[in-house]
Length: 552
Image (tube, rainbow, N blue to C red; front, side, top):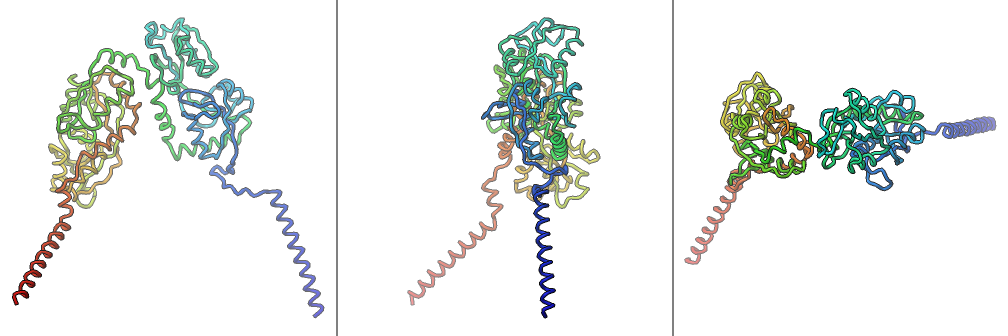
């Protein structure tokens, strides 16, 4: 027994020593190789919750709020914030002029700086990522009342052209040399002094980033003189940041492929390129004091004529909003309603009206009709309306409103082999589907829900088609000035305004009447009537019984 106790004591001591040694090894391992509990990002590098120094300079539209406590906005600022969603970076903003911050980036005093064009001589000084953060068109802008300067580059001779010390200087010199003209190029170190010099007429011409310079009153774009991609560049010593930036840009392009276009559209509306009228636009405005607008009737929420004979629908608000957004006054707007799309288009081509709305069907049919089609005012899905269960035969025979060629063009483009039967209204098309005279019809996505609320169409089904349908303005081919004004206006007001107006007017397509309420709840009404009838009978029986007993 003593021997057993001896062995047990021996093995117990050995166990304690092994446990102590194991615990010591674990402690050493923890202190020498600390465990990082943060999850790894998709690049394989561990995500770091660290601060990155960003060179932030004041540049209208592109980067604004370059001061402590100032609210930051702009294309580049939003791009910084979006990248942070992928990298986890926190930013420390360092303020200064463009040139000051560029020098700091080269010196390694800041980590990132946005808006740098690619130049071969810079590649040894700073690091460029694989993908640009955007692209820029360089624009020459003059004072609108300066009649000595035109689109002809020769008229620039002897003029003072202000330009920021950047890649634009080289592009401007190339432009002047290529066109055989000379001008006095004045280089500025920051945007504020450049814009101030133009606004106070110290310089004759402003060389600007067309999509990165805010609109200016009494300014007119002459021409473009170059273009460049621009990058979010990195301190040459921070290869770790460059790798993370490349990965973040790649992920952004995969997950949100339209992000840069959306960002550009958001800020484009307030830029000098979007607001400074071209020569053809100014010529149209100077020669027109009226604007005749043709619109399609019975096509809410887009357009219609109300009970008092006045225009209603989106078009009623759209034209005044565009003129106001472009700061155009002195134009008298009148409206002409059309029951037939073909009649409306014919009057545009004859010059009886200036613009038609809505126009659709794509560029091919617009060319065939002799009109220009503007940028889309609004895009919506189309809904396929049919009876019974959906199958492949549904799209073989369509009922089409002969007064709305946009529907016809859409079907011929997307279902070229289908049979088409023409009817005089969309209501007749729906009735034809109900009666089995056609397999299907289509409704614009902004109209379908409200039209199909009608009880008589309760037996119909609909499904959204994948092919979107644009609604645009239409002007006569050759009317360049008006087309450009309309495109400019559409860009300025943006799609959100038109969508909101469309939803507002869609409710006028169908109103829920008392008769509809009665028909939808007929069994409830019959039940109430039956209960009342039974109650009256019971009351009469009770009174008759009471009277009988009194007589006894």
